[in-house]
Amino acid sequence: MALKFTSGVLLLVLVVSGSMVMGQETDIPVTDAVQNSTDTSDPTTATDSTATTETTTTTTTTTTTTTTPEPTTSEATTEPITTEVTTTEPETTTEPQTTTENPTTPSPDAKYSVEEGNVTCIIIDGGISFTVKYADRNNETKEATVKVPEHGAKTSGTCKGADDTQSITIFWNEGETSNTTMTFSKTSDNWFVSSFTADLYLDNKTFPHSDVGGKKLHLVVYFGLEPITVAVNHSFTCHSTLSTSNITGTLGTEAYTLPLSSSLDGIHIQAFNEIPNEPDFVDSVHCDADKTSDVVPIAVGCALAGLVVIVLIAYLVGRRRRSGAYQSV
Image: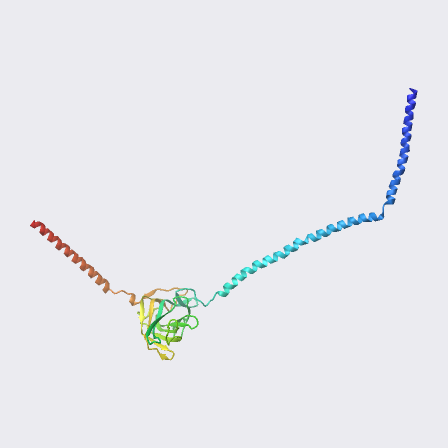
């Protein structure tokens, strides 16, 4: 037992001493290693490590500064371009509309009128034509008709002319124009047509192979409109065609000797209207040509009555003959 105890004590002493020896040997190299590591560390490596950290930070800052302004600059440049395009397009579309409109060209209406203020004093509607006979280069008499356009021509006139008159002039054709003028006068509360003239340009298309082509023919027309006078604030209308050959013509300085005529077809005329804000015809007076005669209906009635009497007599005669034939049998 004593040997076992002593051997165990010796082993314990050896282990403790060995550990102490090992601890001393390891303590020395550890400190040396630490000192050597601190001593052997280059200052350059330390500076290099700091330099690398600085470069990384600078690169990150530069990238953020360069990337962030790019979308803002692109957006800023695109937005004013789009707004400029949208604003200029409607301006270019409206400008030609204003330039193409011609205020002197009348609207396509069948009525020609003269207005002053809020009063339409003269209105003319219907067909007006002039028939001119002329001689061609073979000395044959030909006939041509010049019509006033029922719409699309230009007009001028006045509601307060000299000597308390009113007038309207209608112009048509391009270049060498033709025109016709009606002048109206008033006595007390009635008005009438006091003058009806025309200046016709005899173009070569309407008057081919003639010596009058390219000249102007001045006409003074005398229409006997019945009734002669019309009350103020009333119009004159005639559905029938009115014609006259009572015309004086002048070609240049010489009198025109060949026959001339003029026609008014479905004419409706109003002058000396004093009703404000009234752009249309007022109460109308019909011409005598529109008034049917009482002779025609009376003649038609008498003819019908005569036919009825004849049919009745024939019926009675035929019936009597048949009754006589039955009695004889």
